[in-house]
Amino acid sequence: MDGKIRMAIGAIGLGLCLAIGSYCGLGVSLADEPPAKPRRKPDVGYYPTTQDVVEKMLSLAKVTKRDHVCDLGCGDGRFLITAAKQYGCRATGYELDPKLVAKGRAQAREQKLDTLVRIEERDIFTVDVSEVTVMMLFLLPDMNAKLIPQLQKMAPGSRVLAHEFDIPGIQPDQELTWVSKQDNSEHLIYIYSIPLKPRKP
Ligand SMILES: C[S@@+](CC[C@H](N)C(=O)[O-])C[C@H]1O[C@@H](n2cnc3c(N)ncnc32)[C@H](O)[C@@H]1O
Image 1: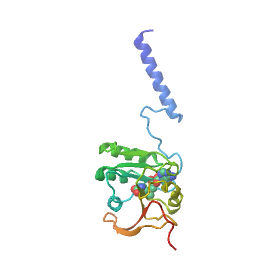
Image 2 (image 1 turned 90 degrees about the horizontal axis):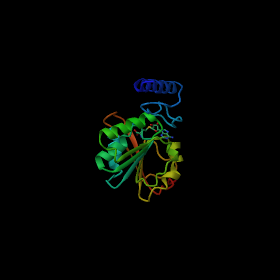
Image 3 (image 1 turned 135 degrees about the vertical axis):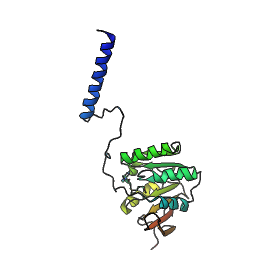
């Protein structure tokens, strides 16, 4: 058989295999696209923090270039991208929704911040945060409570800021309400430091 004809038949065969594999859900894909759905149901839905609250929380945390900022359940990565852009620090986020992970990574790449920003498709309850020095949380109270053993592994003096919901049973150093100009709403912000201390009676 002529070489060109053999190559053409091979290419058609490969194309068919990819198409059938993809159709049958075998995970074969030319573009290696992320799965559309999270591998498991997230413990809370996606409610993005307004950009001005993001900036306010980072400033309350007194972030510097030497910090390592983290957002557990990072959504589209806005805390991480803002921290890297404004303070030049490292920033890591974990998120279950692959579409949000892809969006965050794309934005970090576009803004040339991908050397500082890392976003992983991971369950927040399985990650090691011992290297993090500034933690951002916008999760439900029971989730915040479940994270206490992980947060306590952060270095003494590290800061944890929680948006809207506190960490049950833990004494904040400061709690404040702040009005966002973007949604004209009051936002609760809780500031903690490591080691976390039991709430005063
Ligand atoms: C309220 S949103 C906050 C998003 C972002 N931190 C912000 O402030 O803009 C909570 C996020 O946590 C994610 N999430 C929920 N459970 C999770 C889990 N177990 N592991 C990783 N991400 C989770 C959701 O998909 C959602 O994007």
